[in-house]
Amino acid sequence: MSRSFALYALATINFTHIIDTMLIMPLGDIFIRTFDLTAAQYTYLVSSYAIGAFISSMCAFLFLDRFDRKTALLFLYSGFVIGTLLCGLASSYVMLVSLRFLTGAFGGVIGALAFAVVSDLYKFKERGKAMGVLVGAFSAASALGIPFGLYLADNYTWRTPFLCLGSIGVIIILLIIWKFPSIKTHLEEPVHRPSVKRTISALLSDSNQLNALLLGSILILGHFMIIPFISPYMIRNVGFDQTDVTNIFLFGGLAMVISAPLVGRLTDKIGVLKVFTVAIILSFIPTIAISHMQPSPVAYALIFTTLFFIFGSSRMIPANTIITASVGQENRGSFMSMKSALQQLAIALASLIGGLVVFIDEGSQLYERYEILGYLSVFFCIVSIFLIRRLKVAKDN
Image (cartoon, rainbow, N blue to C red; front, side):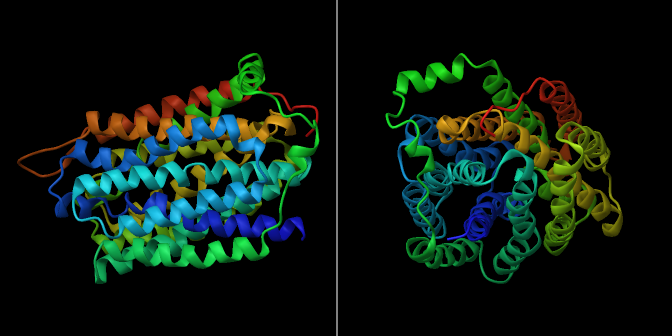
C-alpha cells in the first residue's frame, strides 16, 4: 500500500474530524438562541471538546507508540463517530456539553496520530508538502463541509449535521478496516519500548522538544483567541445573517485549497523560518481588522475573514513541519500526543478567556470588548516568532 494512499486517507479522516471540531463555532448564534446562553456558557460548550481532547491526549502520550498506527486510528475514530452521533441526539445544553467532552476525548488524538503517521512516512525535506495535504483537509472542511453543515442546520435543525457526519464516519470506519495499511515501523527499533518513566524523562530532559511543545501551544493560543466569537460577532455587530456566515467558511476554505499546497512547497524550497515569519506577520492584518470591525458591507468583511483563513493556515504549515521534526521516530507518537494535549488545552483556554473578556450588552445586544482578543492574538503570535528560532531538527528526520 503506497504512502500516498495512507496520506490521502488520513486527510479524509481529518476532513470529517475537523468539520465536527469546527461545527459548534459557526452554529454559535443558533446555540446561543436555542439554549438561551450567556457568552460564558457558550464558551463552555466550545471548550468542552478541547478539554476532553486534552485529557485523552495526555493519556495517549504514555501509550500511543505501543500500538500499530492502524489499530490506534480505528479505536479513536470509532469512539469519535459514536460521540458525534450522540451529539445529534442531545436533548439539553448540559447533555450536549457532556457529549462534546466525550467526542473530544476520542477525536482530540486523531490529529496527533495523523501527524505522527505522516512523520513516519515522509522525511523532513519532503514533509512540508505532506503537511500541506493534511492542512488541505482543513481547507476542504471549511470550503465544503462547514457550509453544507450550516445549510442542513438552517433548513432542518442543528442536530442534522452531527447525524449526517456520524453516518459518513461509519462508512469511513469500514474503509479503515478494509484498506488502511498497518504501520509498525516505530515498533521495530528498538525492540524493547521505553517505559512510561523513560518516555516522560526523555521529553522533560530534551529542551528542543519542550520548546517545540511551547511553540505549538502559544501559536494555537494566539490563533484561536478570536475564532470562537467570529460568527456571533459578525452576525450581531457587523450585520451578517446565517447565510453570510456560511460564506466565511466557503471563501476561506476555497482560498486555503489554493494557498496550502503552495505554502507547503515554499516551506520545502526556501525554509521554515522565512515562510513562517512572513505568514505570521501578514496574519496580524485580518486579525486586527476582524476584531475591530463595525457594521460593514458583507463583501468588505469577507475580504478580511478570507485573509485570516489564508494566513492563519499558512503559519501553521511551516510551524508543524519543524515541530514534528524536533523529535525522533522512537517517541514521535507520544510527543505528538503531548503536543495535541497542550494545543487542545490552549484552545480551551482561548475560548474561556474569550468568555471572560467578551460580553453581550443588555441594551444593544452587541458583543463588547472583542478587540481585546485581537490584541491578545497578535501578542501570542509575536512570542511564537521568537520560539520557532530556537528549534532544531532531530537526527533521524
